[in-house]
Image (cartoon, helix red, strand yellow):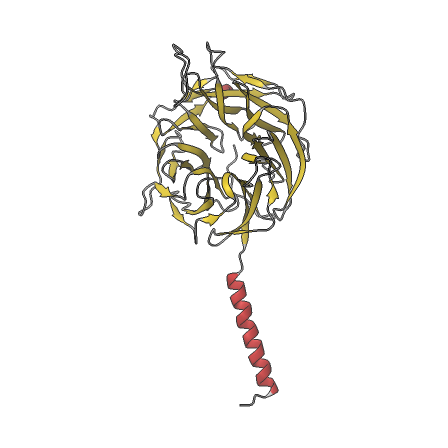
Length: 408
């Protein structure tokens, strides 16, 4: 069978159009860049890694980039990004006990900049909205501490931060273990969760006769010189073993997960950044709740439960801060993840996708967020493989894409 030149040209053009259409259909349009910190594997001195993923705008599926970046230390445990999305900070434990600063370009690529050490063992990090301070909750011997490290205009970490000890009133000699730190979006205060290991230490020893409350949240204001001052009434009681905390984007409410009692404890932020318990009782969560985050509009809370391998979805009453279950038909307000979720983030560009890092699953679970009710449904092909034992997540919008937000 013979074709004229015109017919051949038409055939080739048609095939090319079909191929182009197929490739376009398969092309991922990245709306966010997701960072997943994991251990490197063999060797206690081996640096951990930061795996980088593109988030598909349509499905929420993630696709890995290569190569991964070094976390700058043996065991990454926490990450924080500036509100400009230009700087990422990674806290490493193990043989490193350091914090690495990485610059983030518009494409989401990472470039290692500077590292700080000499402040104990970092547990959690948070950056204030202004991008002027990196707050570090650290363990210094038997005492927990908070450090406010100044940041340069390029994100460089300053030196000379003076640690402020976390002491339980009337029990200054108790062993205090910090678990989380969070800076308010209005830049007025920073809060640290911690528990008293002298009175709560399952499987270990406690101090006989010590009747201190086990769980606490410490509040501080910070002046222009980086000096931390406790808020009135600080520290505030926070259950048995508070594991993490977060505040809503309008800086009106603070929420703390209690790992031991499987509850979410809520506080209203008063004048002077003091805290008062909600009038309502704490909200029941799954078993052993850990990390907590908000959607960028401040309408919904997401909590990972380590023992259950689930994530809770809660809607927030904007007037009172009270929480109610964000229910989907299939799973209620509790959705299954892969094994042992320890970190959770919501994408900032659309506010439509939620991701968890699953420590024992060596994976990331993805969910689509219903913007009306907050309920979750699994994203395409979830869970996604990660590095070994992922511990922390951070996410930035891709390029110059607009973000979802609520002004504090």
